[in-house]
Image 1 (cartoon, rainbow, N blue to C red):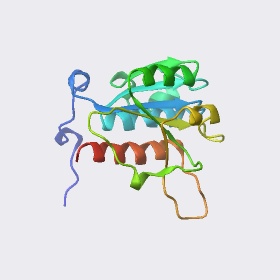
Image 2 (image 1 turned 135 degrees about the horizontal axis):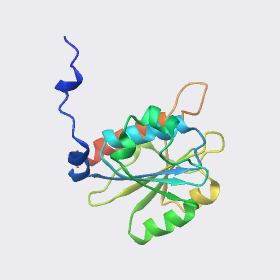
Image 3 (image 1 turned 90 degrees about the vertical axis):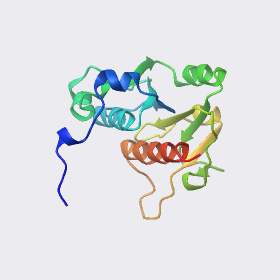
Length: 177
């Protein structure tokens, strides 16, 4: 088996990405402090044709060299917007009938492997601060809380890893209904 060269990967151009049909997923970053995590989320969002990223609260915005280091140019492809208050974004998206999903460990959370997607539905996936998680007032306004099943001694994943796991899972489920 031979590794493929970048030139063999048939990647979209920036213009091709912008014109491509997007996956009905929106990412909301609720007070993310690590610039590397933000860049990684941009890269994951590019990989799965995410509609948009909302950067909220203390979450830094492009351009920034530390975001760029992990985003590898995806800040130029994925649509994004800054909002000071995550709850304002949720209110706006709810008015557009977008399903609000906090990714968190909470009472009555739905395990990711049991979460069923619906056709003709856009999902806003909220990922929270590296230490405090998704803010409780944001969890309270969510339509559903989704938890990633974990089986080891550490019951947390890095936010960029969580974003990759959940975005892939929802992307995959949306493409099989």
